[in-house]
Figure 1 (cartoon, rainbow, N blue to C red):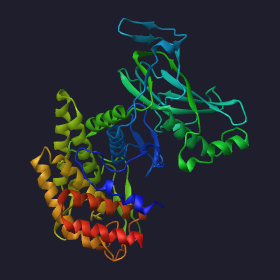
Figure 2 (cartoon, helix red, strand yellow; figure 1 turned 90 degrees about the vertical axis):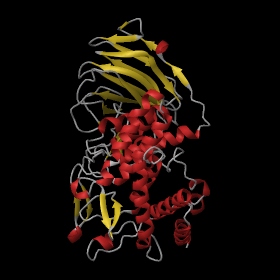
Figure 3 (cartoon, helix red, strand yellow; figure 1 turned 60 degrees about the horizontal axis):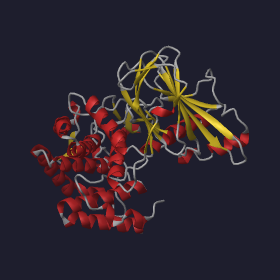
Figure 4 (tube, helix red, strand yellow; figure 1 turned 135 degrees about the vertical axis):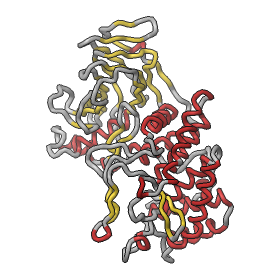
Length: 467
């Protein structure tokens, strides 16, 4: 359980439209993240489906987490070029530093052991083009253990799996880099710690185990609920043709927050639909029994729209002059679902004849509180550049002030309004972490508006948590 007095520290409650947003740390290491897609560089969720999929809320939280870490500063970024560490290359290098590897040709790059981020630009030409990250763990009792992570093209829907046909060290995993050759330059950002952790999670979950001695298996798998890379360090990186590699792009770093932020920005810009949203590609069941509510594939979320606006506002502010317009246009388009009723594919519903932006736009809606407030924060952020966004924020803020008492049962905050929207449904108390989130969000609302009503509610709910 979190330390109450840490959670309610005042530093979390000063809201800055362009400052750090939320407390989204280690998003990629969450249990509900299946892997980070190597090609796009964004996380893939397994929260509601065993087959990994792109979940907009999770992806944007990952991007905002990178923004927060970049803004935090205090850490010197160490960059080590790797072009001169390529060994046994069987390829041709042209004047602009591009190496072409033909069929069967390889190049192995020796890596620095203490720099976990690998960055390079690669163009693959066939399904058998691939690269392999080779790692090594030093054993307590002496000796080493090896692991190989294969990054291959596959039409399979999974993102990480075990392939018994691969002749590799005892520990190996395959990550999917797409169903077909890229035929274009892709900027890869490979985080050693994240990929090793996801590989071990997959391997440890196998019914037939790791096919290693029991003591070693216990050592590797004991902490899988608390994601850890278990001390595997990078050793070498092997590229297999046919492919092209930009040697000047090949490097290791101790962090890559701007690069990963840009990965999320690219994903948002390339996947936004005609309505201005980012549809969720899986079905979602919200309630069961006689109150069963189901969202079909392709549903939108007000929380996703709000987080996207917060992200795009910050991306616009930090972008270079020639790159700003695309973020502005995307954010303007993202306002659309806030004006589109849920029954027409948007996120707008009503509660007591007041507008409400639904995190889960079922019919009827459930009125999730934290998702609604995240939507308001996004609208407030983009109001820096949009009068329409400001107007939507003001409408939503009025609803929040009028309806907030419905989320207070006198002892704790409620997660949503299903007890009002669904006949005879039992009120759903917020989990402890969501209750703390509600308090933090209300503190932000007070910081934004100066309205003592929000501060008073936050203090009362804080007392609930402290007993």
